[in-house]
Image (cartoon, rainbow, N blue to C red; front, side, top):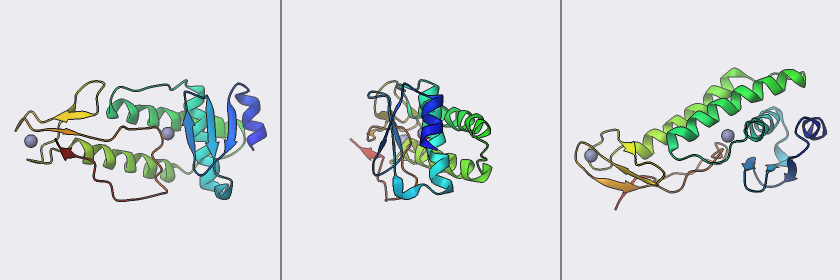
Length: 156
Ligand SMILES: [Zn+2]
Ligand SMILES: [Zn+2]
């Protein structure tokens, strides 16, 4: 499968690593060999989707979420080319975990109002109570496999 994919994206490097990710800087897709089951294949298609769409950088968490959605769209096209099928429910689950994450980050730790991210920064500010908080830098393809408790909206 890696070979087939590599034919479709010859300028992208595929390398074995601990988890699935897309690095725009190195133009490299990392994949986990242990997880080449169905979900692993889908993840691989998804990362290739990012690569094909030329996803480089995003300014806000919301923009990142939109890129995740389009990477899945692209992954579905790729799947057709490779005669595979991606379970729609799986896609929705992945996107839901993103939406949850986004909502955790964007909820004001002080009053619970949903806030907007300040452009191109890792901080949010609440229009209701004027609290500001910082979040850790976001990245593509948060590993929905490795769930760990995230404390992501800490006041500063
Ligand atoms: Zn607030
Ligand atoms: Zn992704």
